[in-house]
Length: 157
Image (cartoon, rainbow, N blue to C red; front, top):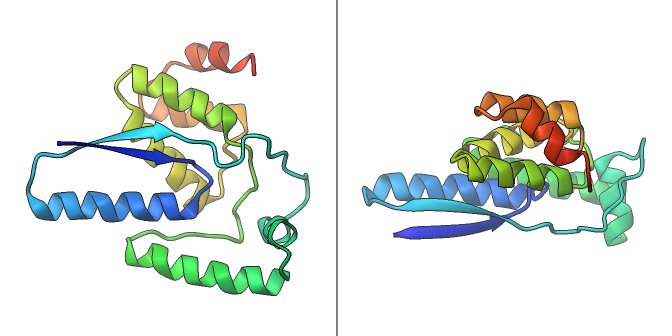
């Protein structure tokens, strides 16, 4: 069986769901393949430099920063149930277009799922900037991609 998972790197629920799915598959003992797929939640998103993620979400949803922080605390708790350690204080608001390009290269090279794990962990647990080319190169290299291939791919939007 093959399961396709459509996901964006900036969606905290996507990473939590991915972890729960992997755990369920492992517990089932069945031979199931997960194929990660690209889906940009907000392709036109242009982050505001200096704006925290909490400020961005408050403006986007018309709620207060304290309400965002309360909601984030619930998401952090959900993440913990999946074995993840989200750090929303370090989370950077990004456009994920370039990260999805690198992911597609990783898929072509047979390491797409590995790249998704590195990128999502880096973003949610370590506060890595998924719009930064050097960050994406380091993530790509960690799963076996070549720097020059990533640079060539990312030179055009």
